[in-house]
Length: 118
Image (cartoon, rainbow, N blue to C red; front, top):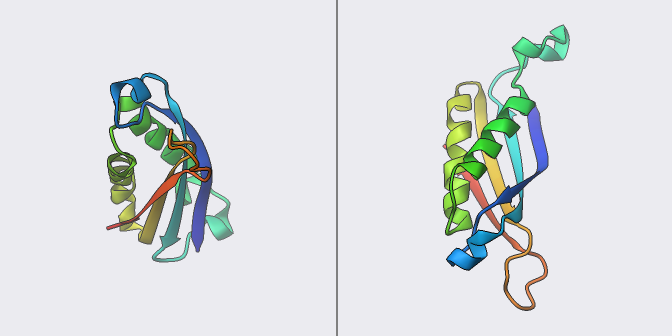
């Protein structure tokens, strides 16, 4: 089974200059988690038998708000730490952090860092 979180929108103080970090920027975070074994909640409908994606989102948000970040790479690395404890029940996890609108002329699609969590 795969559980995906799509486009958790966060405001992050992110950028290469203090001026850029002065105003929080939109960042979209997505996570794909592949379970190593069956998930009991498929049959039981019990929240305690699956991962709580609300809790995962809150943990990612906490990391985003914890400090200012110079690079989207470091932000992604710090966020990947939230997923590492979950690897006990996961076969794999992938994290994507998309800086929506970096202040670069003519760059209209933003920048994404994608990490496989190990």
